[in-house]
Image 1 (cartoon, rainbow, N blue to C red):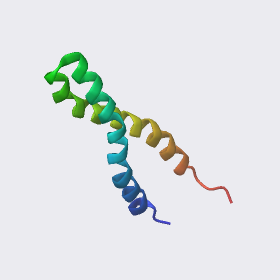
Image 2: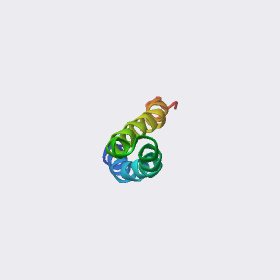
Image 3: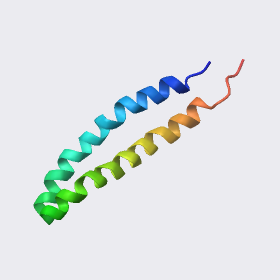
Length: 71
């Protein structure tokens, strides 16, 4: 059973939502602490945290999905 297109679709739909959850707090915190420089680095910082979260969820999930089925 091929699930790759479905998983790619789920990732492409949920990744921007995860990034938005990190972007707004990063924007307020970094802007308050570093001024305009914090404003500039808020989006790349949110992207880094999003990638880390996706890896933390995706790697164990991939291991579970690759287990061979026992008959």
